[in-house]
Length: 320
Image (cartoon, rainbow, N blue to C red):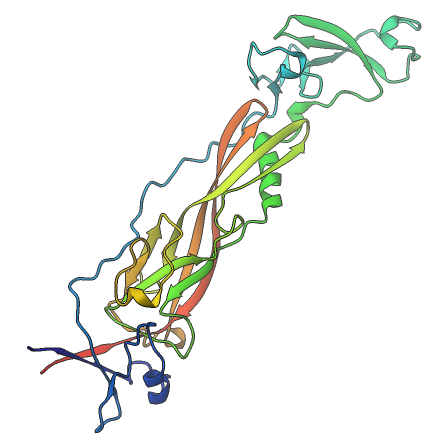
């Protein structure tokens, strides 16, 4: 039976000393220093070389598109027991009047103002606040109201998206903590052609989702739910791996198997890279769905990322 002898080229990484390379396991199943060459002191490893290694983690559905800002002015008659028409956006102006979400009607100043003692003043004197028309075309209601200050003009207020952004800020979303094998650090090194596993370490609601928060502003209340759609791994060698799951943490009993859902195989050593290591960056792509103000929408959030470095050594294959 012929076998393959893997001889680690300790000179592949200029900063890796013989002692560090020989004593630092690349994988937890002990794939280094099974035998030392007495002539050179190099570490020799007998392994079974598999076929073409796979690269799990392929781009999937890019998810829903961003739906924009939504309408700042909306009708919602549920507090009045009115369900038809259902809640939804309305024009912010009509015939010179403006819409107020707080009053659920179009507001315009009564001109001229009613005389003193008119019931519409609700016991107040002219000059103390003002009387306004409140026109609710959804129900055919037209009334007068007195307020100390002009009713809020919802057309100048925040959009549902802007309120959703407040909810997102309250979530305190963060990049995933990187799990990767071989482990980062100067005392760990992987091999060209051996599988690399990537995963989100201890994913939480704030690093992977789902997480839900609500926020209110300008008469609008929005509830938003955020979750990661996928994580894009820039492997530092010019390739990207898109993983639609949080990944599977590597365990010693997995040996040299490929990751089932988020992995990569390097074809070149990291010699010559900055610090003789590949910089691996994981960027999360979030999808936030929001609802409120009689509307629903989607916000896409990219750019939350974290990086680490791993060292990959080259191997020389000898047939004996």
